[in-house]
Image 1 (cartoon, rainbow, N blue to C red):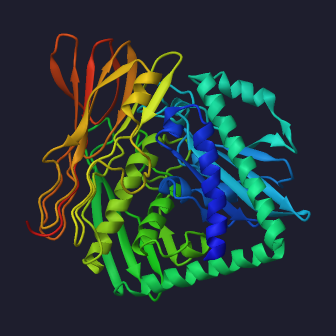
Image 2 (cartoon, rainbow, N blue to C red):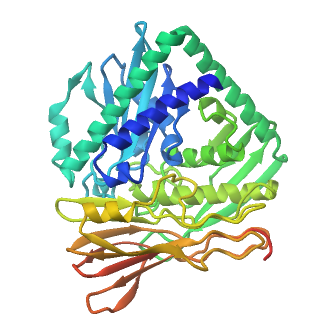
Image 3 (cartoon, rainbow, N blue to C red):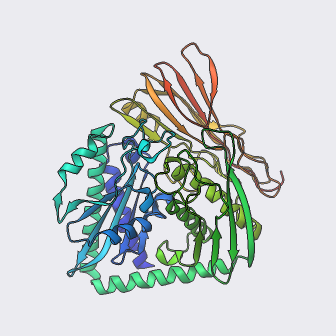
Length: 506
């Protein structure tokens, strides 16, 4: 575990460099980024305590890059391709090899959510019918080739996004993050020797696999089924089913999502990498943080999906919301199934939405997620006003938001009474009210506006979320959970996020 600490500290320090170097509030304040370290074969070795939906998908990204490129010293590959290990287009990923003693010894990866990557709507998170409407899709390509910078591609990409200076600053911060990781690995190799580092990398992955199998042994053998629903696809009012069947064997689990809804016409589709990330998150959480999160820990989990479904989207299906909303529901269904087997360990449903807000104009774009209530837990109430499950970001400070963009935050606090009643009550959601100072286009991708977060074992559901709008005359109306809206100067948007479900009879 000493070497696990050393390896993970490389990723943690990469994250510190990125956060302190970035330009956008989304990265430097909300910390919407992730860093990870891979061995020379492309197997996840260690990660920082960053974003679960990023980290669980990164092994697929690295695998796709290694299939396409024979990486050399000085190379850096850039991609955001959701169909090749990505999540959604705003998550730009940089991967670089680290050569020691003449061979590729490690790979470094850094993924960060950029507040805009082009597309039809500011923030690149609006409802779309085709992946091209969501922004610029970048198949894996070398942004640096043996140290030579691809200036032509760089300029072309920046010319297609809103807020060019912010995008460029964030990308250069990602490059600085990779450079710091390389320096730290060289120092570790100098101190311990490369052969020792490689041997410890193998041992760590074997340890994680063995420990995860022990964790899975504690689940009673059998099959457990659960289904839950997305509110809608943003076009119709029909709920979208997500179904899972867990088959628990001897030290392994089959997680079968076949039978979930077909691919949707809007961007609530999750690619397979996102679905895998959600499953990995649940089982790592079940281990209570005792299993080092690396490739070995994932080996006992077999994940089954059908292509062209809401949990395994294929080109050209739009996917912006699958990463942020559908991933949360995938967690809810896996936890719901596990609650039947391990009622003393599994919490009620948390708010079930990242409550995504994006807004912008011609030359700027902003994006944030807003926390909600955590589900009540065996032995404790849920936390209030926090990000749960597949997100691990912070809420953007009011001061940072108002300093950077034409908006005033008029209200920000807990939403009293939104947590579900129970022996252990669900956490409270948040209320966040914005008054815009100039015309903007606003995109909302929010869930649990029609269907409540479930309680467990007699606990009551959490209160559903609510999106409200006031025009300049003070007239109020309710907004749908998903959509793109034009808002004028002086108009107000208020987002009330869901509470968590209660656990046990009140």
